[in-house]
Image 1 (spheres, rainbow, N blue to C red):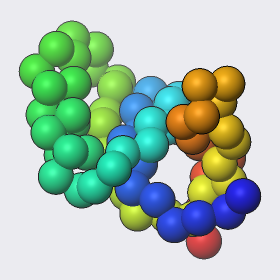
Image 2: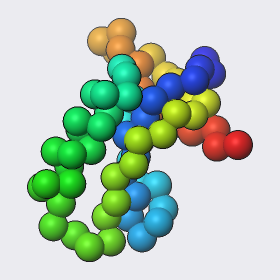
Image 3: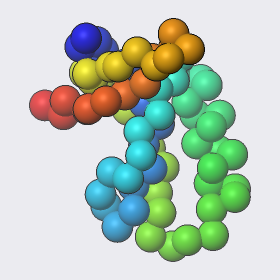
Length: 71
């Protein structure tokens, strides 16, 4: 299922390493602040984006990002 989502991205050496689904922008920015405080690597960056994504349903009924569709 494709949908417009807010995602918290972890970029390592300018490549997307992980994308986490977020309920809203304020939650995403709060997660970004926490991640930046605990970040010790110099090549790691966190970014909040609004993008189209392909979602998959987990066994517990929640959704996660299967693939980002960057246009």
